[in-house]
Length: 370
Image (cartoon, rainbow, N blue to C red; front, side, top):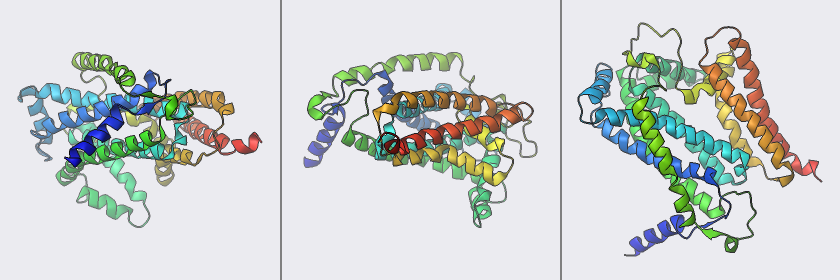
């Protein structure tokens, strides 16, 4: 009985009586939408796992079996495939909103959110490989080979992940198990993310003196979260009309270890990082830059000198940062030829320059405004 009461009190404190700022706009719906999509992906993925076979000789065929033979298998596969893109759309919107409102002031919330982002990228990559098509197979070869740059242990780690001397059926089984288990770890970290958020309260454009200056989460924001239904309706319609427009044509060809695609391109949500990786000829430096394109944002948690004087400057820099990220994503799917080989290093420098400029300004703001 005590456990039931404690659980009810916990849910009540998270969704009903939670003190919330009066000025949370629709951009705060991004977080709730991400929670919905995560549950949606776990449900659709579980149904797909019933019929999927993680074997190099059968994986591609079982995907076709799900599409053509399993009752409603096609709809689960289409929704799961496009659900990954929906998740990343709102994930990037959520991160950019956090940068606009300087949410890195909430250190535990910010760092747990970035950890979720890294795990979701890993999860999406492994799911991409499970189709066992030409593009996903060779993407697995390229990305896992990057781990070989780790000093001393790199080649051993790559061999361990491959379970041999190349990407084989054993590698596919390894990725399938991780792809199935990792979402549950992500759910736990999401719960921690919410607990940290509710202990500090959300950032907002209006300063609140305390809980007495706020409103209850329900019904005000429960009603506002209901607007997510509109997004779901749009998602369902677009998924049914354009099911594979966000995919690559090579994903309809079974993996052939003897012949690589002419132009290897990852999914759109990895393109900015892929462009940074390709921009640097040196493999070790390229991998370091790839990691730093995300790890850099952990350093934002070191900012202690928040000042409202720099709000407009911050929003301008974030706007430029978003533009540079979009251009890098476009460059990531371009051929390795002029002028793209010149533009990729240029916008990689701009990407890191803007990120460290935002960080540096707030780190030194106390000295600037003494």
